[in-house]
Structures are given as structure tokens and as C-alpha cells.
Length: 450
Image 1 (cartoon, helix red, strand yellow):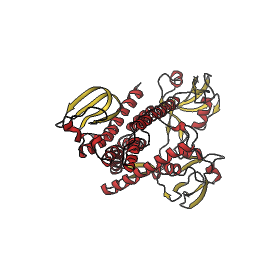
Image 2 (image 1 turned 90 degrees about the vertical axis):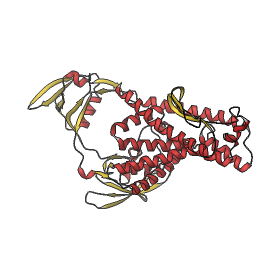
Image 3 (image 1 turned 180 degrees about the vertical axis):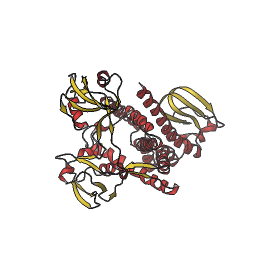
Image 4 (image 1 turned 90 degrees about the horizontal axis):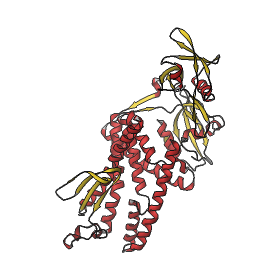
């Protein structure tokens, strides 16, 4: 229950920030263009808080925190007194209307640059992209990529973090192959050609690296218990923190992976654990609880977390940058996220990326909660990513989105006359249906993940 409220609160905070930024972009440019703004609302529904400024603009924080809007004076919506017609949105030039509509997504992109620049100034701790293991029979195995090698280049892209490697691979969906440069523990370089022919992200929640067979290095989990879930099979059996599991049913256990395999294969079956507690060996009867996995198969669940070995110091890198370098990096990273987002939309259309990977509000809420729990740097990175996605999504040429309005105004710019109201109305209906379908599909994916 705590996780639910934590994720919900983090979601409201993140969405509130990003919606405010987006709508302020529209608001600021509208004011500069001489349009009278009637209302600036964060959220929908019943107003919780409202106030007015000297321009008689109403500011509202509403009850449903799932978006926001800027209401402008517009003769197409309300009757406008003759003396105020010059202040209405529809009375402005088509170029002014384009600027007002485009300002929302542009504000999201500028905010992403700001968030990333602050993140780089605070300091970014990252893990070097060292290969932990390679899946047998995978594309990485065929390319002769080996454990303990560090990825330093993919194509012409310099790679210093796992995020770099992931983004670089994702940008190459649809290509035949890519050259990967690696460095081993003796600082010897190895150049490998990774076959990408027919490679797709067609499985839900399978990361790009995993799908080609690369498992990032992680410290080994030991057989010593670090945490025990309340009311779990482990707690009911009497396991304690700092116990070390040495055998199950008389068979010695040598790794955490081996223990997990035994537990998962034993739902609701009694197991005899041999546990080292301080200087003595204790015998405990443990009955793993049953849980159903994503494939509908029952698996055993113990309810413990292991003590994990420390990360090697040379695998962790903390980087700090000055203000100018941080802004430059923020611009570069934002541009990379924008281009990657458009690439992913194209790959969704062509089928290179499965629609199962779409996420909705629940997925964003979980991501927000997780990033907040990791601290300021992670939250800033998350805000930048979602801000870019919000900006890109709003630029899609769906008539109910900013991109749809821009499409109509650009057509008007070249035709020298507006698109007919009948055509616009039809477009809005089709756009609304498509948006509802996408939202429902993303929510279905979120629920299936849960």
C-alpha cells in the first residue's frame, strides 16, 4: 500500500511539473502575441485552488491531475465583444497561431535541457558498460563478444554508460549490422561485427541488450540473507537476517542462482534447509509460497533478498561538469532523446518495435516512484525523458493534439485560407478515437505488467 501512494504522489509531482511547463509555453507566447488568456488550469474538473492576476486571467489547480489547458479568447468557442476581437486567438496571423501552438512542445524540450544540465552539474554516477555474461546462441555470442569486456564504441558512437549502449542500439533498429568495439581487462581492443538483420524489439519488457544476448555485469549475490519479507515463507519458517543457506534437502547450494532455481521449482513443497547461524548449523523446514508468473505457471516464492557483493571501484564512475559543459551536454542529450523518440514511433509503425512496449499512466507512475526513491539525479533524468516524450507525442499530427493543430495551420499558411470547419471537425473525431485507443492499449499493457 505504501508503494501505491508513493508512486501516486511521485506521478502527480512529475506530471504537475511537466504539464505546468507545457501549458506555460502556450501561455507565455500567447501573451507575447497579444492574445487574451482567460484561464490557466493545471488538472481538470472541480477547481481546488484559484486566483486571478491583473490581466483577469484565472489560474486554477483542479482535482483531476491528468493534464491541463490554457483557455484563450476565441470567437470559434465563445461570443467575443467587438472591442476585444483583436485580442482573440483566431484573429491573429497564422504564423502567430503556429508559434502559440508549437510553444508547448518547445517548452518541454527546453525543460529537458534544463533538467539534464542541472543533473550534470550535480554529478552523474554511472556504471561502466562491462559485459557480465553472454547468452548462448544469441547474436552477441555469434559476434564473439565475451564476458568482462567493456563496450567502448557502437558504430561511431562513443559508449561510456549502459544508457549510451542502449540508446545507440535502439537507434540502429532496421540496420543489417553494426561494428562494436570492446576493451578487455588487459586494455586490448577487440572489434566485433554484430548481426542486426531481422532484429526486433517484439517482446514485452525485454531490454535491447538482453534481446541480443548481452547481460550487464553485476556483483554476485551471496547466500547470506539481507532482507526478509513480512509474512513470507522465509519468515514463517524462522529464517533470520544474516543467516547463510548452505544446503537444501541435503544437497549443498553453491550460488544464489541455484537456490532460486530450487525454490521456483518447489511451490507449496516442504524443503529442508541447512542454515549457518553464527557458529552453528540450524535445520529449518521451509514451504515456498506459490506465485503465478507472466506465463501463468506456478512458481515457488521464498521472500528473501540476498547480501550482494560490493561493486568493484573501477566499475563506477562519477562525473561532474561545469555550467557551460552541462548546458552543452543537456542540449546534446535532449536532441538524442528527441530523435530516438521519433525513431521509435517509426519503428512502432513498421513493426520493428512491438506495441506491447507502450506504457501508460501506470507505467509512468511506477517510473516516477522508482526515480524519486533513487534521488535527485535519477528524478531529473526521468523528468527529462518524460518531458521529451510529452513534447514529441504532442507533435504527432493527430487533430486533438498540438501537432494536429499545427498541421491545419501549416496547410492554411500555404493555401492562404483555413481548412474547412467540417474537415477539422471530422479530423478531431478521428484523432480523439485514435487517442482513446492508444490510451486504452497502453493501460492494458500497464495492467498486464502488474
